[in-house]
Image 1 (cartoon, rainbow, N blue to C red):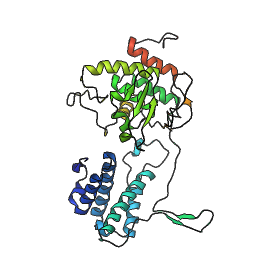
Image 2: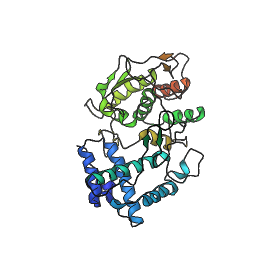
Image 3: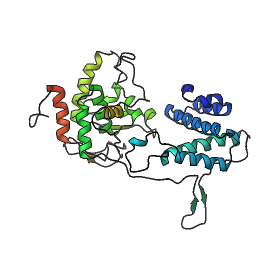
Image 4: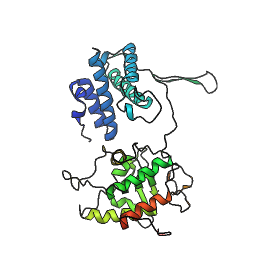
Length: 336
């Protein structure tokens, strides 16, 4: 069973009903990241209740509306660093949806325990017989689906240049994440046994995939060279085969990297790029372009494979590998 980090949710720990609800979610074997999201959202709701003298288990629709108003107008923690052209206040629509969903689930549990009669958090309802195919009454909040933010060619070049100053592990982390369109947990939990080095393929295990489905993804020639160099470097840290990525800090030498950290984001923020890399990947079941200029990659049978956005620059990837091998200078034509 996943251990709940109660120190992260002090208000949940103090409130008996909230504590028992979150503990039940852990007993039901929810994923660690899901538990963390539930804990943070519930702690935020309890903080609102404390500020406005609201009984958490007796909240009304009017008080839920005030909570939504608070979410929409509080200072955004990312304020000045937001990339979209907005006022920088209020939480994003997806965050507000998450907060309201957790509150609705919590109130559902109160109804099951017969501690209240109704759920003050509205949800959409299917109404048969209205218009073509029926209609749905809207939920508490509207859903917004925005186009993904993609870095420009210049920003992508800045990221690759700053990557040359990063440790070899971080270079492999970013390129594997890019090549395979890997989510953070999928990337950090990779084990050496998941790799087929002959065919440059990675098996993503079902227990770490967000959709619970195992799949196979590929990676390119430059990434393969860097991965080989990292494996030689890794042997000096640990003789064990799994997991692949290990901490190199003095405090946690050779320990597995935590899923809560974001090495790729820190890499960009510490570099000269001035932006946090939000690289959008879209899984497809059709052939997709190859950033290394080697044509297209077809999908593995019955597996969503590769990414379908944001092509890397061929020359920049060559320079990254050349500088790792030769230290400086420009790669010779046809070197790779």
